[in-house]
Image 1: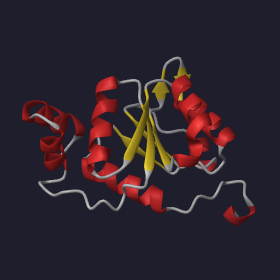
Image 2 (image 1 turned 90 degrees about the horizontal axis):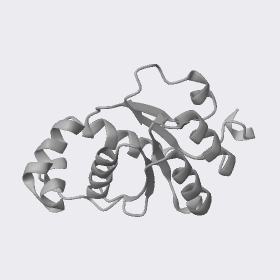
Image 3 (image 1 turned 120 degrees about the vertical axis):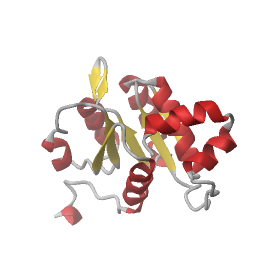
Length: 165
């Protein structure tokens, strides 16, 4: 199911539990991801709220930021508790590349996945610097959850550390 399709279905279905059951095909969360925290950054409030609800249904703690500046401030204050970041590429007046660089300044081992509707290819330099993936909006819920699980399970190693060679 695509995000927008699920969003439309959720808006007709009511509360969070109904939304969780829709997102998860009627199954409850296993609870195995409850200890993990995700910083979700997007300037589209509706999409950010949807992302939050989906990830919480799967047991993740979610911190949100609706601008690049807000995201940088939150990450500077709380980076030790954040396991990964979902980052939009266009966050006017900033770009996802700038925000990514700032997050890496705070923590070179930050785990970041771009989730964006940006039409151009993700800059290769971001992958060279440690970007762990990208998802194109709209993406399937399965792709989102799989990417989050894969990234959280990936050992944190900065691209400049000796063990990354």
